[in-house]
Image 1 (cartoon, helix red, strand yellow):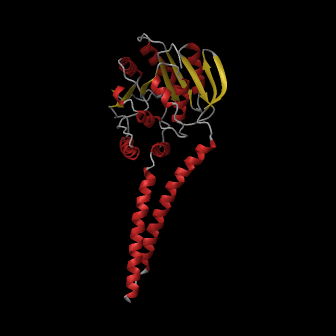
Image 2 (spheres, one colour; image 1 turned 90 degrees about the vertical axis):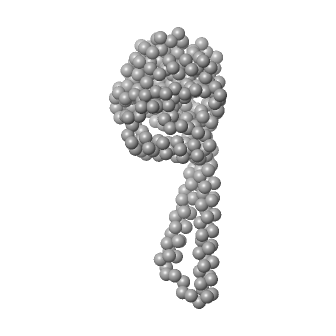
Image 3 (cartoon, helix red, strand yellow; image 1 turned 120 degrees about the vertical axis):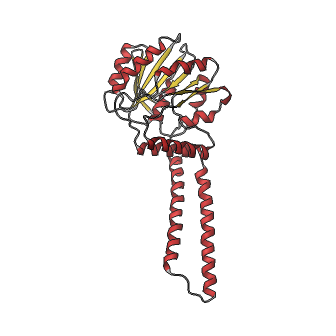
Length: 321
């Protein structure tokens, strides 16, 4: 990864055509004041609008900008991973394309890196633009994830961060079929040489967020399954406890039978059976999720496929990873 580039800025995007121009304008204005060589990698994650045409336009006019077009929508984390694999800078900054990660924060991230930080995290402070539902579910997710995985992620974290090339080399070794890079970076450690920068969440300039409730649930599921086997351990304990309750109920029924007492009505029996079967199906579901992950991993499918990319006016096709 030897390179003369100082900074790579990796930006995954899906249907962000209206934000590309203002975003690149702000980035180039900010980076013009930095005495650094840099590149901006724009990853089109299978957009349905004019995103790729806008990427081609800015790449033609601004030599620091390169575009990467994936063959379809692989998801935010896979698109980000595609950009990280292409990044050539001595440090890599990842951020979103909707301007909620303000480019004005870039110099502060870079200054922490120049001072010796291998990882510079960010933490959003002003969150008035987020709905109460999004704030609460985000808080719950990070609490549950931290407990299950043993990898602590604080509320307000995101994929807006800077990582040194040394960290990048370790990060791209991860072979998770559903990567959760936020957790992966934390898992790597480097705590003694990391720092955190606080920022105010910016306003989305154009379009609507594509992060629906269904996508959020899928993201949370992938993150927890990738980093924790505790759901299986919890499932075992639930199974043991409910089995104990079932055997206690069975012993009670046998005792009542030999004492000649009438066993209680069918309602309680059916209720207990329904409860036990319900728990059983939940446990089978948890096992099914892990088995599905193993099945998908063994298939060895690429995590993303690059259809084409621009690099100083040249194009290459068919790359995958």
